[in-house]
Image 1 (cartoon, helix red, strand yellow):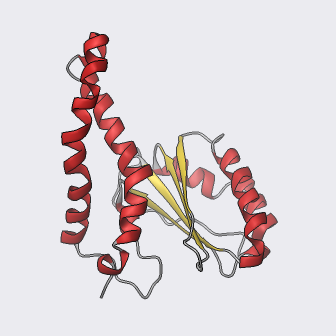
Image 2 (cartoon, rainbow, N blue to C red):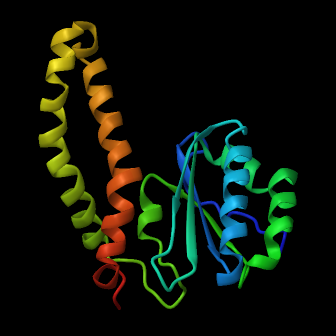
Image 3 (tube, rainbow, N blue to C red):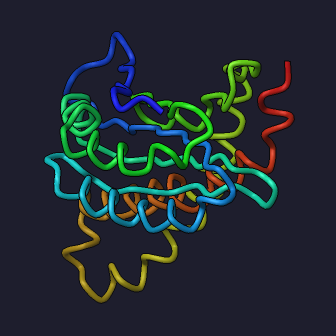
Length: 196
C-alpha cells in the first residue's frame, strides 16, 4: 500500500467547516489481530493533532474485511494536516503489508460521508434517498430527546436557558446520529441505498 495516500478535499467548501476524514482499508484476514492493535495506536496519535474532535471505527461484518475509520476535525486544514503528516505516514508504513489494496481517504463535510459508496462500482445515492434516510433518523430524535432533558433543566435552570438548552439537545442528537445510529442504519439499508 502506498505510504503517500493523500486525502481528497471536497471542493467548494469553506476551510473553517467541520469535516470528517473518511478512511477505508481492506485488511487481510490473517492480519486482523495485528491491525486492531495498530488501530488503537493510530487513534491515540491522531487524537493529539489540532482540531481533532473524535474518531469512530466501523468494523466489517463476518466474512468481510473493509474497515471504515471516521475522524472528525474542526476544519479541512486540520484534517489535511493529519492525513499528510509524517506521523501518519510512519504508522501506515508499519502496517502496509496487512492491506489488500491501497487505502482510500476522503474529506467529507457534514454527514455526507455516510453516503459515499464503498466501491467505484456503486453509485452515490440519489439526493432524495439521502434526505429520506437523514430525516427518518433526526425526526424521531427531535421528539424523544428534548423531554429526556426536562428533569435536568428543571434541576439546573441555567442549562435550560434559551440557546444553552438547545445546544445541549442538538449536541446529543448529532452524537447519536453520527456515532450510534447512522453506521448501523446505513449498513442495514445499503443494498437499497446504493442500488443502481
